[in-house]
Length: 425
Image (tube, rainbow, N blue to C red):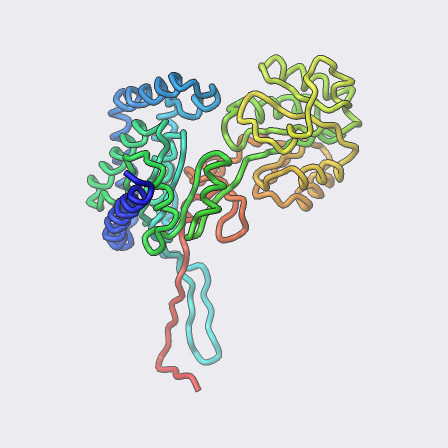
């Protein structure tokens, strides 16, 4: 088959999926919140009852990844455990407990001519989600779409295909149980990369694209998409340990931010240490990171105090390791830290550790990342931890959605104008 034939076949396949999604869309728009919640709760119950089947499907994906000699960090993102599956089940139930994001009156006002105008939240329509290794994206995306009365087409990577297909079927089971169209959730079973290109150019079929993956995927989506994109390029998250940081707090938060899960976008990648505490707090943090089996790459100033750490290169700063590696640099003061983050950050998540409330507020006022934290681990950069049930990702752009993309971010709005015979001169 020629490349042209492959592209044509991919466009036909995506058009078929979008046709099904648009047929389901009207039913979802008319569905009651009770029906949508029932779909989520039924899916949660079904996943719970078929956990062994899901673990077996995921084991096939993991075995294939190991045969391909993919990195341990990648395999960690791919792997499902009973605890992680239970986390998905809990997320479904949490999302079912959230308020309905559709049909909400966002604003209302009247005009001097008597017109009554209101702005009402509405679903976005058909979502296209492209992801790589994380099977939980299937459930998160489907659940958020169902709750917000949207439809979703999911295209996972070849590494997670068995898990994604089965999870998609489980979510479709929930829709059927609630009397809703199962095509509100569709998982693409073919891993041909031409299908990604067809999704990105499906104007009129898909309303927004959400990429969940590494830099190469997101760059391709942003370069080729002919429809709007919710995206973050990378999670280059920084933690700044200020001169007034509590030593024990700093040690605990830094280790958690880096090592709790190294392969997620909220994992800290760069640690900035104030020179005022380089001889006091820094050695204990370094030792704690070493004990947690983290590779430390430091600049000359941090290595002068802890000569056993590795030397950092300039490329280590502004790099998303997604592994047990952290880059460390000494800074003179808060403005030095801010300047470094502005130069090397990706507008994802940054944190300051300090007991000085004024410095903390100054830091958050100067950093324009989508999430800025004070005295807390960057691993909390997650829609579930924000009380949103789940997320489709952390959007770092500035159009429509920013930060965790959850049910409210998956709505748009319409205006309703009520009159009593007004005409315009």
